Length: 225
Image (cartoon, rainbow, N blue to C red; front, side):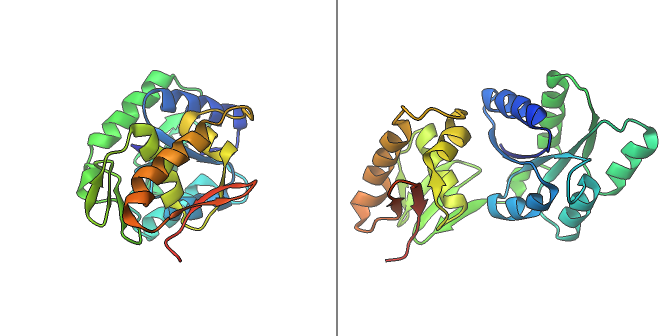
């Protein structure tokens, strides 16, 4: 499952990111309410863990926008506001569930599992497409020109990140943080190794390179000649 965390408290966000990635979830994070909707539209997660108290745009406003645009995403709202009226406001705004801070991580996992079984996400087919390259986010299978690509889990994760925002340059540090959960390790060349593997499987057999390098900055994906 792809989860987007919208949380302005860095310590809380880091705790959630580490814990959820350890459980096998693909996790992205933004720390400002105004960044939430663009991230949702670009990344198309299945679940958003949404803090209620955020800078620039609060969780209730974001939740109402999600529902008004009929985005196919579950919303789990987090808040230190524990009164019944606060929980009611969150649910009325469109949240699927409401969890009060502080909470046990095991309870968070249980609620995520329960939400995943409620009106299953698989009913909405989620797919990324760039040119003749397709990535089915439900089955995590990639195809180019209709041919199934034999990719490992990490290769798929790198490819998904690049395909999530075509033309956007992702630094090595961003790829490390998103795919491996490493915040900073300038000595590792693991990103370069996996990009080379992807090029051999995604680009070389098909005569057109989609995975591009911006020297000294990072990688991006484009089907433009």
